[in-house]
Each structure stands twice: as C-alpha cells, then as structure tokens.
Image (cartoon, rainbow, N blue to C red; front, side, top):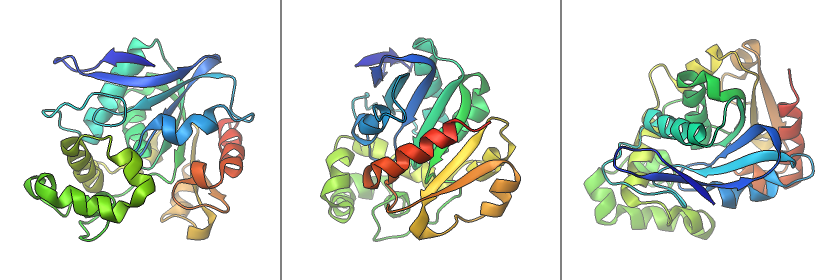
Length: 256
C-alpha cells in the first residue's frame, strides 16, 4: 500500500502497487468501487502481468481518505489522481479504467497529457445521464438532493445495489459517493465523449458484447477509438469474464 497527499488539507490517495517493468500501468475503478477488488486478478493475469501497476482508489473511495469538503467533480478527481501519479514518479502511463474511472481517465488525459500514454476504457461513461429515481447508479443517486441522500436515501441505494456492489460501495464516504455520482451524471463541458474524440493517444473502448455497439460507435471508430466487444459479461467485464477481459485489454494495449 502506497499513498500521496493530494489536497492542501493533507488528504491522501492510496493505491496498491505491484512491481514490474515500465511503462507504468494505472487501474482506475468505477463509482462506489475500489481498484484492488476489481482489478487485482487482472493485473496479475499472465496476459497483463509484469508491469509496474498502480491499483488506485479515488478520494472518497476504498482505502483513500474521505474529505467532506472535497467537491468530487470529475475534474477534481482527475487532478488529485494526477498529483498522486506525479508523487509516485509516474509519467506516460497506460491507463485501464472502468465506468466512472473511464470518465475520470478521459479528463486526466485531457488536463494532464504527460501522464497518459494510452487509454483502455472499460464500459466507461461518455455522456451525461438524466436523474432516474429508483436505480442504483449515478442517475439514481443524483435523483436525490444531498440532504435526502445523507438522511436515508443511501440505504435505498444500498438495497438496490445488491450485496456485491454494496461490499465496496459501503467503503465510500456517503458525501463522496453522492457528489461523485451527481458530477458523473452531469458530465463535463465539453462532454467526456467529445474530449475522447479529440485525444491523440491510442484509445480503446471495451463493452459487453450482449449490449450491442455503444452509442456513437461509428464516430468513435472514425476518430481512431477501437470499439471492442467482450463476450459473456455485463458491465463489470473484468469480474464477469476475467479471461476475455485480459485478452481484450492486452490486445488494446498493444495497439499503435
């Protein structure tokens, strides 16, 4: 376990680090998740092992600190990740990022281009989502006010999330979970999709084959983003089909 101070108040981002060769590989988790739980098996899979790998938890999540005053915007997450990577001596990293982590990774690559050499996005959020009451993800959480969520809405989300997701979601600070969800659902300006289309690094977008091609797949491919279906999985590709994910991620990392 390693850590770095990333706010003026002394809050720390923490990550599990695996030794290996350069370039560094950085794994970023989704909303209410934690990178070691979601990516440990992938990072040591024979197709992906051997690189120095940082399995990093965002502020408010997992092993990292949970400051109440932090805004938890996508930009703030990206900037604190950048501070952690800089403190760790990381540059030109290969970033593998799931769901909300993919949105943060896109913003990271846009705002701190020296830190990212390629992106492998795993069913990442690319577009804003309208608030949708009665669901467990960012659109459902953002349908509450912050006061409503903290007063008991979090328990309703817990019950909808199910035991697996709640096992890591419960580690997130409730303020952090709420604000991260709200800002993820709202997206960025320009949108994450628009930022992704303009990035110059090699980019791949892995998605569950059963869901069909993601929205705007043609425009993504026209901009040089490899759109890669992975069979036998849902949103948590790396957990549902570890072998298929490792194969697809390794191929994506080998792209020019």
